Length: 209
Image 1 (cartoon, rainbow, N blue to C red):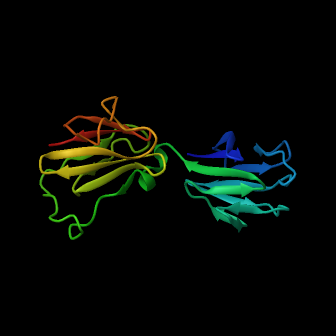
Image 2: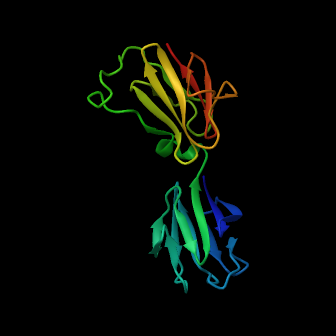
Image 3: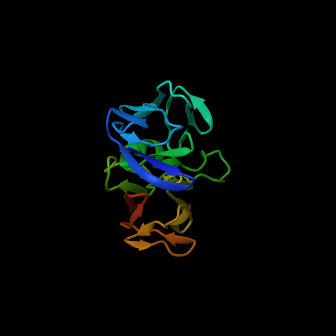
């Protein structure tokens, strides 16, 4: 599900979940997102939800609608896009498990011929199993040397295959992932069969045959 974070001069004013097929934005009080500023037209723009995608369309506003600094008429929004209307900035964020396919498994190291040396043995690799959210039940085999999991800009961790087993490390985000409810301590932590990892609101279980 997407949400919009409205800010002015770096101060967050409101957060709005994008749940309707059409979400209107403008100065007039009947809009879904009301921005009471003379730089904003009465009916400035509309956000349209088509399946999992969200488009923004400028409604012939006086001062225009900008995304990441460029004027747009109609554009598909991507995670972390910044919509600019007057002095207001509206950050579009994709959250929860519905966008798992796009953001959860970012990359799985390099190909076998890549720069990680010999590929890991293919026999009985460990895997992570998603326990909650829209992707519950999904399993990802840890066949590569490094598998990165998480949501960019929110919380990211890496799981690395080493000769003695698998270790997890914190890569990005203000808070550390938790293992069995305890925040990750140190640079790397060994993973054991059955460990429950939680990051970016998603719980995953480490399974090693």
